[in-house]
Image (tube, rainbow, N blue to C red):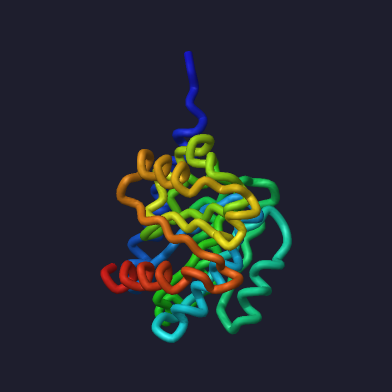
Length: 216
């Protein structure tokens, strides 16, 4: 006899995620779940995205971390509402955590919520948060072989952001090999090459995201 402990956890999570999705739709809020590993530049990418979109959209951020509120404070310093979730060791966010976060946000005045998931390329892929879209960030220093090692996150992402492209010569990153591996796993997902801290490529990524928000 085999007992699947994962299924009831996911079933409960998905049921609440469906309720969240209805709530977001009712308030016309687009929700982006950003997946990435630690050090990929999630927060700097979020800040660059906010800077590009804040004139058109009202934005809030939900920050997921095992501990600390460092990233949330960086977002708040830019005049953007941010809610910190500390998982206390869990390697991903769940819909119950997101529900508690959005309960303190004024959804009626928001157009976009960006969720910065816990830094992990495995666990967050399984958990629906009621989002409109999952996207993932990979940084050049992590290596061009990550699609081969972590295929799941590349398959669930509707867009892929390759960050820190200004460091490609330093890390000998094979763009062709990376692009081919991504295309095999997810032929429809666009890949945006950016350097968040330098502003390179951010406009293309932000313009694409803005179009998804308008269409939704």
